Length: 344
Image 1: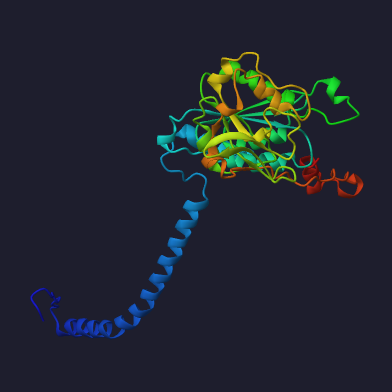
Image 2 (image 1 turned 30 degrees about the horizontal axis):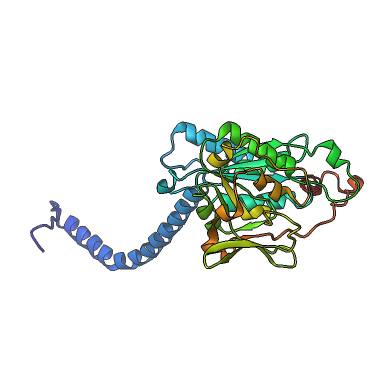
């Protein structure tokens, strides 16, 4: 027995015998008892760890480094199901020249899908303001929800087509002209520098496009894919020099290019207060660029590796038939009522 073991000494011999019997019994059964608790302890530890992870993952009240106001805002957003996506720009991109994206839109079955898709592209572009302009007399709450959730700085406006053009029964109508002119009006009133671009909601955009057009000094031009049977609309470049336009329909246009094929400096526009887009189907781009005079096609800044790359595509979503009306006698009080409100 070592010096650290203390054995109680009883006044009679029986007490000492009982103590040594108890100690012997403990030494025999202790190893058997400890084998079970070790397994049990491990199981309890694993279960506790899983519960802790689940709690921190799903409990909305466990929010680190948030003050009380932030917590309250997040809780309220969760309640209203309007928690916006995070529009993140690295700190080094915040001083980039601003981009103003003008998107004309109108009510149709594909509208909500188109705006949703475009918003997910523009969310990745820093220092951007999105001007979404509806061909209507009032805004659409469903479109407003998409814009709000995107986290992008946006302005949602209306600019209905003038009645004299809307009433036309023959020939194409000048769609999107009133919308784009409204966007130009907003830029004149609110922007001082930067670049603007007409981005229709039925196109597909490479992020590289926005990186390139951001530094436009006057007017930049670049190819657009999937245009007419020609497959592409583009400036023609020979030996690094502009030499004309390639498009499925030239039509005597001085600027024979697609609406998605050019960007304009805000400064350049502000120095031309009369510049606007004409209500002339097929000649909207040509008429607008002519209104930027003095400006000639050969002055255009040729982007997309001297117009050898396609960074924007005129994909056009397939046209869909309007949604059938819902039989309320059969489907009232069902989820279909809400879904039909989303569809056109």
